[in-house]
Length: 162
Image: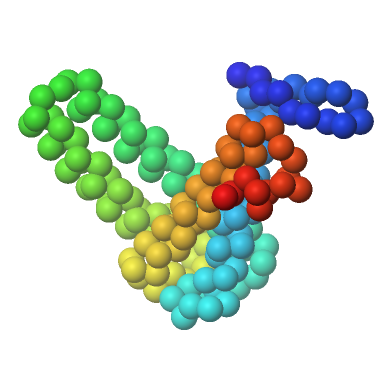
């Protein structure tokens, strides 16, 4: 998978699949750090002892969410391939069960890895945190897709979003 990127100084540059994946991971982790920082500052439900721990927690959350979505997509695909109304219903129920139960797994993994350095007071703060992370990451993806599709520079971002 190769994408073309513009460069005024040296002409077109090629971005490899690995570079694209690295860029995506880096962006998501940095957004997760921002979201975690905001939750720590403005919420009583999440406390993190240091900025370094926050970065590590953001990486762990990115990895755990990636695994969760991979399992969910695989389960959904399994039932979609089988076809039929019953399989669709079972697929939806399975997807909801995976997404719901994964939050408890994430809470436990965070507790095991970070012990007293990260304190998430229950299910609801974690769900709000994860939803906020997903929305922030999706917002950045949408902006990036719109900029790429129109072939304009970041200087025209306000125009692109209209």
